Length: 162
Image (cartoon, rainbow, N blue to C red; front, side, top):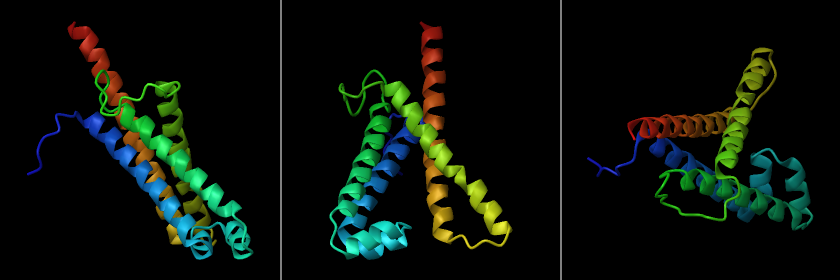
């Protein structure tokens, strides 16, 4: 049995969302290191072609995306322990709004599953990996939404007790 963290389920959901964002950031760094074949596999044919001719732009864009996903993870992790965060980051602008926007981005990206499913039903060729990417985004969005709503509910309960 794993030791207890003392975290509530919403805090665990946010921590899982943060871990997912950090994982996506690491994946983007790995893609930049592998280069053209990875760009092509993950659906960035333009970046693969640019990489093939020696451009540094694909690597810069991919590492930039990795930095954005890492920042998404920082926002989620900073919200894990309100009042005594496990990642006390004071420089984050608009932490509540930022986390809500990030959650909306993940949910919207995950919502592409609906379009992908429709296209597949219409006989269009949609690679299975695109379904996986959308499902991961949807899962991260749901985890973070669960964390946000749960912490709001918990904060309201704490105010009611006082």
